[in-house]
Picture (cartoon, rainbow, N blue to C red):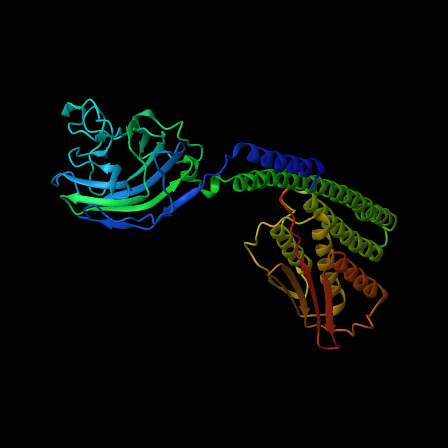
Length: 483
């Protein structure tokens, strides 16, 4: 990884850790909790579920936070009923939170104050974000308890020694990551006074309906303990995500740079290959065409000099025709090499077909071609296709000159990523270790060298009177299409 990216990662990790240490508030203390579900129905005064875990008397001056979740089974259409979580001190009823018997809505009972919309002393309706319709003539936005509509209630008690305690209730509060008791919406916040000393907590239900289902109950010293922090909101996840993002950016930058470098290297190799091809073409023009034209010129001079000798004229004319044919073929090869579109596998196979057909045309040897069509659009480097063609040219020319064959079979196929070309004749054959002529030995050596230059393999088999088989196997280059 580049040094600037590594340094950025270390700095980011350090900043995130520091930010976490500064930003995360002190965790609250859970004094008691019961996260299971309890269905209560016709409980009377109820029974204690606290077991002496927490208590506060009239000398207390701290704060406690209470939480419970309710899924009402009783409905708005039931007869009036009382339900909720109620504090008891001994057998003395203290503050109750849930649904007061005459309130018909989420409310407190056993309070020291009467709510603005309540008609019975000791009851206080809670503000709600989902109040009853305004056409009911209600000026206090309370919410009727309905079956199947679940709510979470949190209430805070600020204990006042020797007096009525201050109570704040939040009906279905925001418990997201940055929520506090200070930033809860006003329309879900209700404040009043009540006597809230206790040493017991009881769950109660009296009156109509089928009861309430309580769950997720707890008592804590801070609102913060009730905050629900999802794993994707935790500092370690944020740190990991930010680090992964930075690593991803760094990796992408490096990948792009590497691809850019590879592209530049590839372009340089293509340019170098193009220069080699131009050099080869120039050399071919000089060697093949130059020597052929020189030979034609000399033969023309001899033809003129021996014009009075018919036998010599005929011999010179034959040699002149042969030289002209060789010149035309050499020119065709050069034109094919530089013509746009000739750098494909299909073009190479097509040109081998053309060359073989023209070479054996008018000869006693029949050329049978078994070459594939509709090949994949695979571009070939100039050196690659030039070497393959010269191997095929040498093999076919040797067959025509030396094999005395009645038939030659040219076959090509592609398997996996390999190109295989086989030339087989039914001619006189030869022993591979002892070619017939020095030229033939030189040709086989050149063919072998060209195959090795392409990473391929050239094999041949032959025996006197049994014909000759030459097979070329080369891996196809994975050459990207040039711009």
